[in-house]
Image (cartoon, rainbow, N blue to C red; front, side):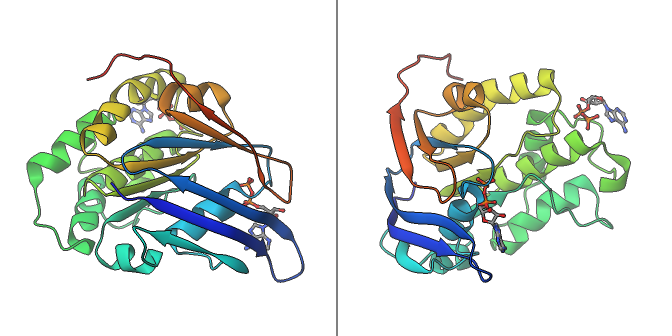
Length: 225
Ligand code: ADP
Ligand code: ADP
């Protein structure tokens, strides 16, 4: 996994919205951290900054000491958003395969099939996104994010539209998957229950502008795959 360092990062959007106050945090390689806090407190902003999709107004983000773009270029970083951006003219399997292409990894039908099964989309490999429900599209996006075994996995409310039963199933399977690969994972969620279930550390941001107001280790033991 990758060590993430956010050093006194501040974000003020054009128009003057103060999204994030000087925020510093370190994510240890291979650990899973959940980021929680009230709506609008800057969780997505922080995640996008770590992904290199948003520049901090002040401060610095480094991944193993380098700019996020370096990891991005090597295909070692994967992001899944609440609103999954699947290519509409490609099947579920092709959308997942595309992540391998973009990371310049060899195509691997077995791995793609394995991830489709893991997220409960068996039988939908050849379906297009329009043929899926919102929850199923989110699950396809999670499979796409995981297929490259990224060194850094950033998940922004990825389970919002996923039904309760599947979410339960995913929550059971996912930690083994990303811990097994030594992936550093950051999960943005509004659900404290989900945070405690999936992460080994929970960081709480204050209302906007966000700053870290709690940083809690989770020592809950859970079954591991
Ligand atoms: P959260 O993920 O915690 O809900 P966000 O990071 O999405 O919070 O947003 C933090 C604040 O920044 C909010 O007030 C939001 O409206 C504002 N914001 C987010 N993205 C943008 C943007 N691209 N331009 C201007 N303001 C933004
Ligand atoms: P949503 O909450 O957006 O309706 P879910 O992910 O909760 O989607 O889907 C619930 C279950 O219903 C899925 O696990 C799937 O088995 C089934 N399902 C949903 N949409 C379809 C569909 N278009 N065709 C077949 N089964 C579906």
